[in-house]
Image 1 (cartoon, chains in turn red, cyan):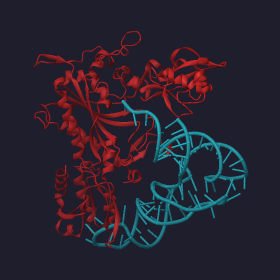
Image 2 (tube, rainbow, N blue to C red):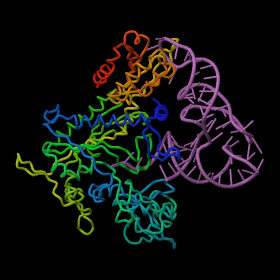
Image 3 (tube, rainbow, N blue to C red):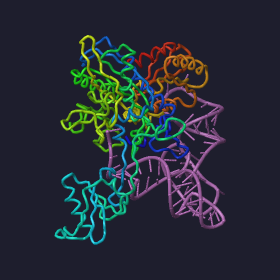
Image 4 (cartoon, rainbow, N blue to C red):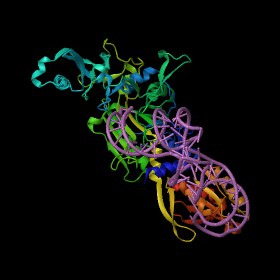
Length: 539
RNA sequence: GCGGGUGUAGCUUAGUGGUAAAGCAUCGGCUUCCCAAGCCGACGAUGUGGGUUCGAUUCCCAUCACCCGCUCCA
């Protein structure tokens, strides 16, 4: 499937528009149109209903170590700035970068090191990215080359002091960049903040600086105690949240795949440390199955366990659910959801302060140069007391974190089909249709009078109104019926009900199936029951 | 962020330094008893901002967006 066909269909039929299009658009932002909002809402509802409302806490589910509870939360997008310092996002997402005009490389400002050297009256700063221990070798080699000297002339170079960070250098015109041959190729350091910054309060000053959340998860952690104290849940249990997140992506690309404003569906599942491994396995498989059940059943979907070296410093296991999006090179997959075993990193960080691995490889509060915690925690006790076992502990966390927009996009890509159907003369004619799972389809059923006369519209309208009581239905009486079928196929409507001459005789109507084009007759007054049955049957 | 390419109606395309063309789609009417048919009519475009010019959609500059490659990717 060519991606531009889907993009074109999405725009033409009102699934997705570029944000602010009449002003020329805004890179990395997308709007959902009338049908897109229904589709995405169905995706989110399918998730919420299955994960939260429909969860049976009295039953031990297949693959689960025990029963468990599920509950929900909806927290703010802007939170206390300290949340992002303790979560690690502030340090990770906030850098100054310099670009090299010659080599086209980009460096973190604080990671470029170097040393001053003079020769023949010229003094330059030789930058390097070589590893500790190889810095001297690298800088000497490049300094010689720059001054057009031979190796035996090395002692004619006058080096000054020790290696220092580029942050200590003010005049970049004297800097030889790590991969450059000429001087002064680096741009001025530019602030590179992956989090959107904003200001709380009408007066904007740095003391009011805050961030739009880059993930919904932290809101769950900081409310852990509130949920525990207010809802009688007991470990093991999960807190689910659906909401917008924001990341200032460097290169938003590939339609909605990498957007700067996007929606997440996240669960933080809290369990006893001794059971966390099993729960991780359970959620990994459970979440994979969710996509399978909703129609991503082909080879384009896969579950991939991260290699050891891919894991975050705090994680003891992470798996991605990935989809081979058509815009990716053949053989490559894009992430739909990550299921991470996060241990007690998050709760402890919000208690004690931001954690980091110490020399012994254990998580400990990261200290600043002054010996105090680099980012102070809340100081609140977020441990859990199990009265049955008389045991107190900091729960471990399993985090299934899904992208609502990515899932929606994957469902669209997977559902796009072209085939040939016979036209009124029996000649094959190209048809485009979205083979969406009925549960996801924006419109569940369309109702047509075969022709706009002989009382058919009135009968069809009655059925339409009945259907509308139960689900999203669509009524159309204009033009040839084949065209009306085609239009519904293109937006993935699974069933069309048609009122014809026979309806006027015996009250029966036809139901047409989107995928097979098969038609059969049912009683008009049972249309709602029939369609409901069909929607349920395939769910 | 860098390099290359592309921007004409909702979509696909044509064309020109001097009134911007068509097909499809959409809307209205007629017709039509099952898969985009037919007839009549209607709506509708040079991404944005500058410059050159008597006149710019066309030439130049900038900008925005999209595509490809690189870079980045918690």
